[in-house]
Amino acid sequence: MLGVFFDWLRHQARRRRWDPGQALGRRGEDLAHRFLRRQGYTIVARNYRSTAGNAEADLIAWEGATLVVVEVKSRQSDEHGPPERAIGDDKRSHLRRVARAYARKTDTPWEQVRCDVVTVVLTGRPRLQLVRNAFSI
Image (tube, rainbow, N blue to C red):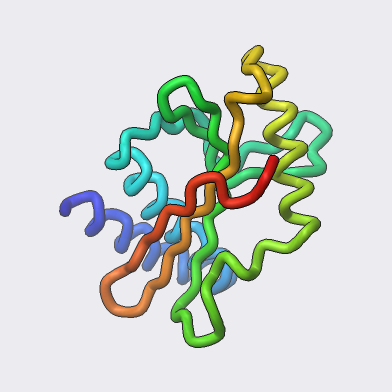
């Protein structure tokens, strides 16, 4: 519970300095990070960029022996549809590039890599949902 309070405080400070959309996205990543840790994931990187710099993943984690590239989608509400609908072909391609780069870096077999999505809806109490293996890698 204390972590949620500190996330909120960080978010308030970011809102004063950052673009509102950027602050919202980072708050969603903070909440998703804590959420995935409670689900048993081991987070090893945040905002990981491929060495070429042309692709980024919000979180990189291990769930057991599986390398998981995680995209976090945050929204103020879900009145315009679920947040995961905003993941287009370009973003999927970027996530695949990051997955390949990180798998090579860690000598992880491709069969042990997947992409998950965490959706965060920030109406009232934040609602988080994990979509395992959200799309084929």
